[in-house]
Length: 250
Image (cartoon, rainbow, N blue to C red; front, side, top):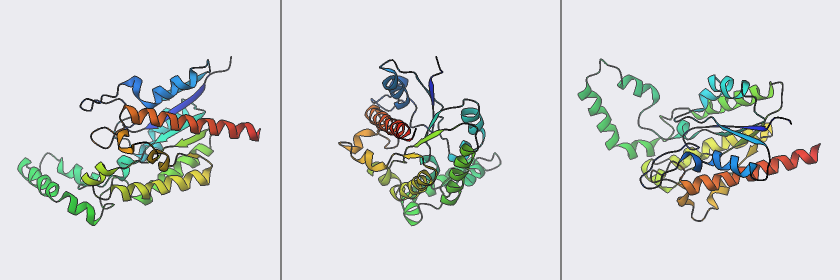
């Protein structure tokens, strides 16, 4: 028998389990796990490997992650869910956080700076939500391009499915400009999917959920059990469409 069709999920914390008040998302409730079960329920042979890690940014996907999870695992399909860490509006850039963490900076000064910025959080973010993002849009675009170029250079064909960066009213209230940033980075992802013939799951498909805000944990950031179930269904639909297109072209 041929080996199972291998699907590698490269994500940040969204496809991972978490504890959030009363809405715990255990490993067997994450969308990659649900996807694996759904794909194999009729005796099919799929292998879904969840290679997500918390706080992942797009930068690592073309570096160490590419070798570890793509070059060496040799997937047939990659599902990418990376970007919310890159684009979230912030009051401290990565460089500033590193400087603040240096041991020679007195703690009282560090705390004073953090308190001052925190008090002006919404004012700072409204003024320039892209000002201190971890990955600037032009950098994000470059990393996405590098990712697809490296994929196309491999000796075997890999199909790509990309999930959008999600935003909602809770995130927008906490971090003004989050909706704007998500749109900017989603446009980059969508354009890359069109250019390289990857499967794009439009954020509008998530907005069709009734109600949309029920897809998220209390932090407004992570997917709850319903959000994971809904995502698994959308990915399943995208996989079916991809396989149908393959059938028509062969």
